[in-house]
Length: 111
Length: 111
Image (tube, rainbow over all chains, first blue to last red; front, side):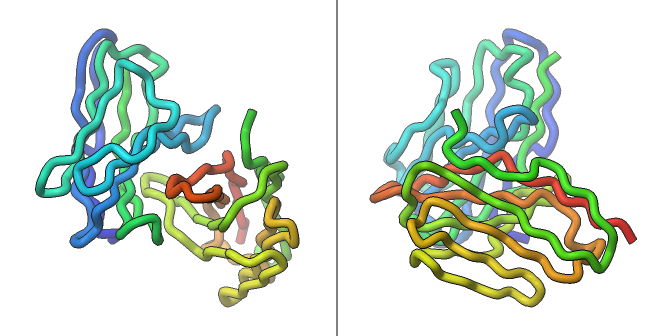
């Protein structure tokens, strides 16, 4: 158990819909990272938050947004979903740029 | 273009064989990490290498960081079925805290 909790574990939704993925980092970790894993692209960095502030942005679509709350949990919002958004979404946390611990992921299926 | 290229993409071997997987880039990394990911789980860190030419051993696993800090290799001696999984390398560049992942090597060790 990495100590990083992601919910839900599975999500099936229709195209055009909006979903929210949730991540609770390890106790004491201030940094949260979101990654998307698909078969053809591998693990792609989406966005990082540190203590509530956006710190780095990767290949995140404009339809996607994220935030980190005062209690340090984070949410990734995906809107106007397309079939190609089907993937595993992972959250990771670290103290600050140190060892990153990954959650078990949310498997999103868009139908 | 993938910043980190991993090879081979797939590897299926018999228990007791040795193997090496590679992680190559044209870019320099301040550190490089190796992860193992099992189905339905997030990646789990195996090792971090920081210094060019560094060699680290973890039981039957030997990790090497290239002298120029652009490439790395993972060698497994006497592979066991429990070594089966997706092996990912990930690099950190400069002052960034984000991890850039390769697409991974899917290893299957048959009993």
